[in-house]
Length: 311
Ligand code: 3HC
Image 1 (spheres, rainbow, N blue to C red):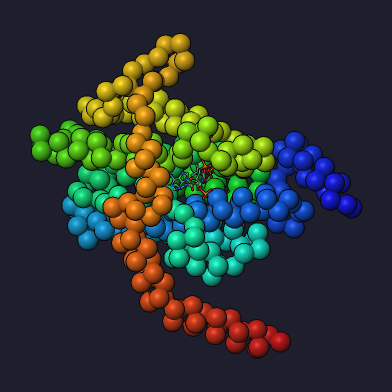
Image 2: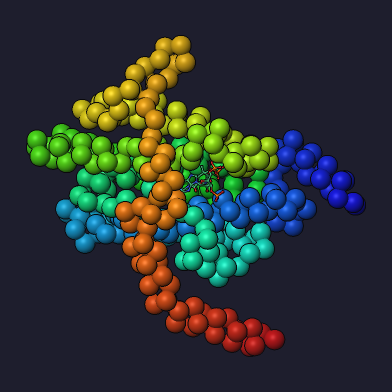
């Protein structure tokens, strides 16, 4: 088949909502787009373990510590499914990790903020995992099969993460005046960065048009951001916390909230590597990668030996 026919077959498969599988022909730009997005997603899961890992030894009770440990481990697992999905697109794990550690690949802006108090762990679960799941539900139907299948389990776990964060916030908001103030302070600091997680406004998003055309994303950055605000307002209200946005108000005609504009200058500064924690995050990942070299060597030696025995 010539390239035209291959392209027609590819487009027809997308039109029938059939998934594209690793051995199927695909346009090179589709492959590159997926490697970029899936690897950014995988890196976000792994780097996202750091701000929460920071609180494991300081969790206020054994129960809280066990739940947080399990959550952070889940994120590690998500990273591994996603790296495996990216590898099916003909790129090695070494190359993907190298892109993260040398700053060529991005990871979510949100993980460049510090987690200052225990309430931040509640706010991260509620808002950050809440925003992640708002974005990721549609990815269960993304057009690339291995990515879509990885997302099914990830979404189940992210929805549990969102609930554990909201439960922490609920307990703090109904606690002492100091606890409630700590919860409100965490909400104030994490709200705007959570809205930025969805990416720049649609008219400034260079990748959205192709992502929608190829059915990689099923909804745009602004559509998802709007849904997130609509969903989160009543959750804050019911526990007596206030979203830190003076422009927030119900708009009857659109059936959703109007809300203020995130600080996009701060966003672009962070994704350029200049946020409060960018350097600390990459240096922690580099240290972990270097210290894990012996594990990779041992696993490779075992695999080689097994191959030799079976040959
Ligand atoms: N953080 C860092 N970079 C971001 C970003 C963010 N929040 N939002 C957008 N960008 C980058 C894009 O990667 C792109 O840069 P690039 O072209 O160099 O890669 C540029 O900003 C322009 O953005 P676009 O809107 O054009 O890019 P996309 O169409 O890819 O949309 C996205 C951005 C919504 C993040 C999309 O990539 C996506 O849906 N990714 C999959 C989900 C994901 O990565 N989630 C990470 C969230 S954290 C997480 O899941 C961990 C959990 O445990 C909480």
